[in-house]
Length: 523
Image (tube, rainbow, N blue to C red; front, side):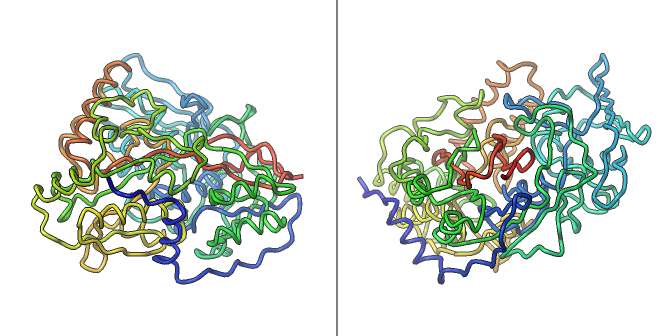
């Protein structure tokens, strides 16, 4: 049995291995009841949620943009930017009508042609969108507020896809000239808050101001659906990389809201005067060891599979949250435990006897011959840093020739999203967390497809989209889960729930996987 890497050791290793020194906190002005000072969990490297799969990009997008549908707490899509929609009797033609009084932040009306252009760009990258595109007959604007999507065969998941992932509606002049694999140059939407590009500095701050022409739905806000009312005049994001400095700023009232406080600091924050700690995201964070299966040595499924007996999910979760076990879950498989598609198929790979010796034997049998393995690890994300260091020790204990490549989160994302791995930017593995919603179903579960898509997984994804009912969809997901163990694109390492901390002057936070700012009040 190998010795577990305890949480504090992981944090110390992280500090020694990736931090060149603590960074100074940016200057923060005095607050008022109409300005919310927020400390996000990471730098905003891009506000484009389609180009980047980073959660921080979605935090920004849900402020400045809006979607045609919004999910409720039961993950059911409801009209958001839409007044309504119709589906033909043969289930092939969808006709959508936009609400009145929708305006972009550049002063132009939101038109059907903007929705069509946004959906087209989305369909070039998102899994739901690509599926729609594969069976699209025609998509066109009918008039200023109405547009139509005509399909070659039924696609019942379309409303969910338009509201659950990255289909944010932006002006045709922007998205029409930008393909899905190129970042947008302007963050212009029709959401309740406007992005302030002149105040954006990747390493220190971002800012958003209330959009006075936004007309919310006359409904109670729930998850990502309902009325998105902006009660604040301004929301400032202050990047404070050092967790202790961020916590002190919150306790002193220098900031109002800390998105992901370090778990070590939660007991202190709970005791602090004027501070409240609560779990906002009901789905939590699903974590994985992610392989670059497109290049050696992890293009070999035997080597990827060899790691399973050595993975102890409790090691990963304790490295993040310590003894606060109510905030963690182990025995976590390829699908989120709360998902209808989670099952016990193949789970013995993660829940059976753990043995470092068995894993070493499998590594040897895989044909691995000491090739260099580059492990990326982000410097400014304490949680990813912690389970990244657990992964690093695991790889070393297995005798793998691993090199730790410390980088900021934005650079890691750029290298991950690069279409080609150059000698300078090549990487082999890293540990990462995903917002739980994305892992609930195959349509948004990007990790299932790996850096190099598996034709078998792609075929099963097609089968899931075509499955006529939930029972049939579950059977397909069981096959997908077994394949994920046989030819793993990743290894699940647990699920945890991150409480958020805020001043008691902040209230009415909507429970959702991506931090919402609509409906939030500050007294």
